[in-house]
Image (tube, rainbow, N blue to C red; front, top):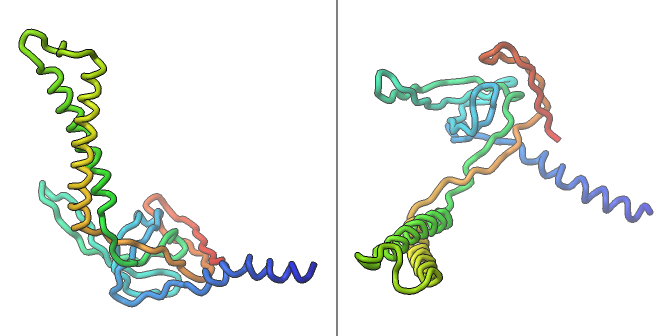
Length: 196
């Protein structure tokens, strides 16, 4: 029984040990993405300044409308670490080929449906919607049109998506156990963050 207990305990605790070893190590000026709902930050890209006591000091840009024009405000904030529910760091870039293929196929398929329906509807001046052939052949023509233009749109979307990329973010743990009281727009809040 003991020979089974020790390996089981090691297997159960190994993810815990790796999570503890991955505490966030940030350099001043590094871009991070912070989620702290009580501070009105939701996956907000910010520039890390420093950790001080139980808060993380950051700078970020906020856009607002002022008399019809867009104004950007450069803001500094001390975000209580107890309020941070998610902290992410950049983990490289990823191609958008998959999103481009999906979008292109959907748009091409919809255009193909419309184009096929117009072709079937405009078969002759005297007949209108009643083209030679039965309804099954008309439906096949519409489906073929949607499939061909959907595939063409998918290929075009893949090429366009492969030429662009998006940033990928990786979540990192914030750190030590913390309990803090901090102001919110509606009053005071108590938050706790515990690292397992």
